[in-house]
Amino acid sequence: MDKVTPTPFSAEDFRARVAAQPLAHAADDYGDHRFNPGHPRLKLAKALRDAAVLIPVVDHGYDATVLLTKRAENLRNHSGQVAFPGGTIDPTDPSPEAAALRETFEEIGLGRDRVEIIGRMPDYVSGSGYRIAPVLGIVRPGFSLTLNSEEVDAAFEVPLRFLMDPANHGRDSRMWNDLEWVFYEMPYDGQRIWGVTAGIIRTLYERLYT
Image (cartoon, rainbow, N blue to C red; front, top):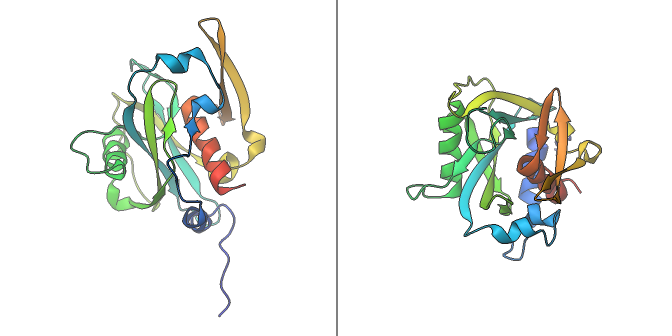
């Protein structure tokens, strides 16, 4: 029987690309500093704090989506920003994968029984001082979410096809102590995907779709 090629931008195609991605090496160097080489902000960061996020690719057949959240407006840091579900890795978390699943359940009520972990991207270092482990997962559809209103205002899905199209990867900047700080931006359906989240999406594109 002939082998069936997965449809582009389906969850199965995504799974195949993850399986074929280059092995992560200690020399891999991903993060905000790639877009802001030598920026003084990067020198102010203290010891990096370890965090993990889940990149939840929802299996909708031909066209998968990526589940994102909008952080609560009352949070002290990164309020109102679009983000992947996730957070700081606790000492009790046995792995970044476990931390990402725990945080996802705490934030939006998506159970780990709905998520199949299929891999991980190299760590992404943020300008705010986090070393982020992006955990890759395929989500079985038909789930219901329960949002933690103290952390999340909304959850929404964006087509993987849209996020992996470099035509949608714009660049913007803002001033930081009178110096320009550059980041990626991917507006979608009234939501502004930018900063670290957009940087991780861009890294995903570079490793899997180029």
